[in-house]
Length: 295
Image (cartoon, rainbow, N blue to C red; front, side, top):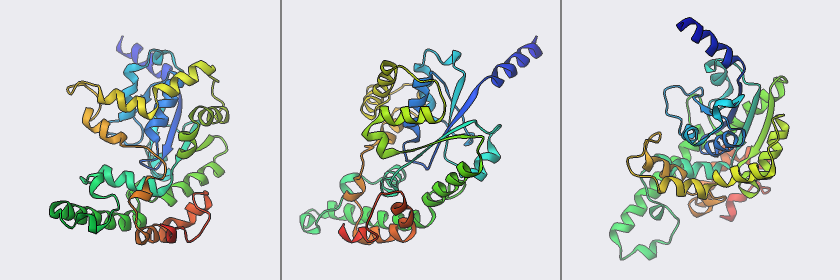
């Protein structure tokens, strides 16, 4: 009986089509994975980063049609070489999301550090002259940010994820060299500005079933930043969600475009440009090669 169940499970898995949502960390991967899961009624599965709780999979409990879906979603961060070495099978479809590296950097900094935004946001030292503790916190956190900008700009996330420019370049190369894989590229900024149209374009590109306008709009609303933030904030403290309620609330942070302007100094901008500037210009995030001089 056990062997029969195992054979049935293998046969079922053969019918499932895997869709990988790939992107550099803090680029909107979780949001996009949940969006595709909601639209397709598909569960989010563990990807190449085995052993790590997949917070995007929290949506599985809220999907009512996941058992009947012919798709499943895998959220991935690895560079192609590491990714293809880890996955059980190459997916037929990959959607790649990218985001302005400066916003990625700031989001990553707050994700990894314990600094408060108020202690990092650019301000005049004069305004802190009579607030010694606030001045100390500001100096300490600005120093941390300065060090992180240098490390991140040079090495990125490191390990199997690499740097931002490397990540984007190598996944574009996969698109060029693997014609059997359906690819769609999405910018985080386009997704924020017009979520429904951007996702629909990707669905067409990936040759996926086209949802009705109502279903698409409902999924977009359910998975919007504001809705998700509100959902996690209203959960009881003992809720059984991956990594806990507090982590999920903090993980979402703000998600706005151009937040880096509140934190990066001209000197920091110059460091980012030195290592990532060519890709920033190529992707159209800046048109002036000396953009950092305007900070």
